[in-house]
Length: 147
Image (tube, rainbow, N blue to C red; front, side):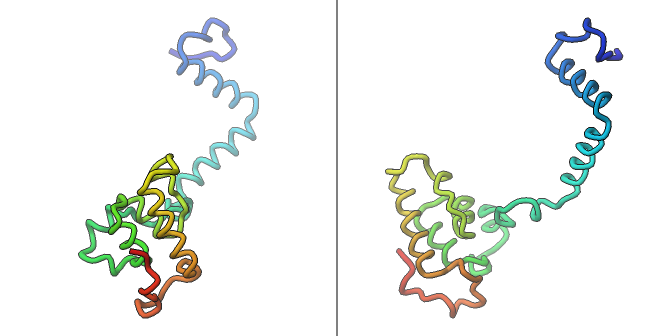
């Protein structure tokens, strides 16, 4: 069945049909904008995810499944502290990379795990942990790591 966006009898048959008709109408009336939208979609699909997202390059679960020790993690001290205090590996990984995403733990500010994660994060932030990537484990003062 061919859709004719100018035919009023084609409108209202279904939401999908109406969307297709709107797109066809937009395409016919705005060819330059349509071409720009298609070009933007192509560019977005060709951009690797790690360049387009601000999230860590791997998930915590993926990291734990592919490594025998957390020492290979770029932020192993923070990752280990969050993991050791009962935080989900994926959330611990996001927090370890310096993202303040405590809402992933709970929306309740009084949640004890969220409060614990906030305290751990604050201690690492006060140490300047995320100011630069530690090059070796000798750069970390383990006396200040919260337990």
